[in-house]
Length: 152
Image (tube, rainbow, N blue to C red; front, side, top):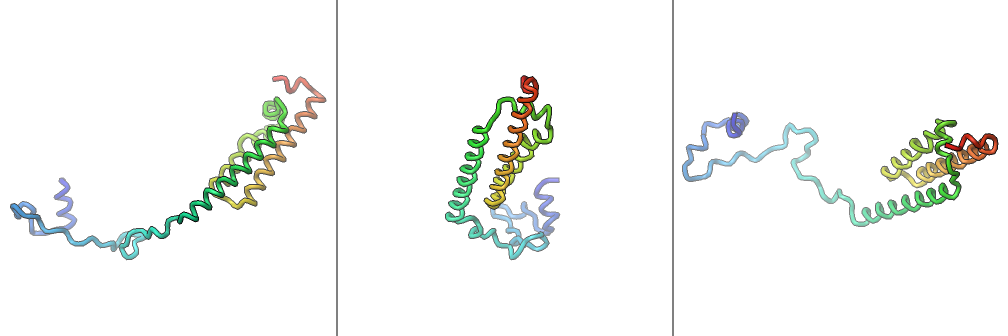
């Protein structure tokens, strides 16, 4: 079935396009929005609903704040880092390993992407830092007892 036949079936008419040699066929009626879910009065999207310049600047400002706080966390993690801690955790404390390498970083990423309240974002960063510090302490304590555990 050709496109014109489908149109004719949708808008049946006794008039045929080829019956108007040299002139335009009649135009179809103005489309209506009746029967379409979510349609209101058939108007286009109101572009005033789009973010204003001030709102875009606020979002960019928030991105900067999230980035600065995440960078501060990374500096803290690097300051306390113990060589071999991740390998030791994987072998000896898999739940903490999972929290440090997947669960907490993924949660922080989700909060950042959702533009969560900074209080919630900061709490997730603090949880990651505290978990990291405890893991390092556990690793150092194990190293004092059994240094061969960290030689991987």
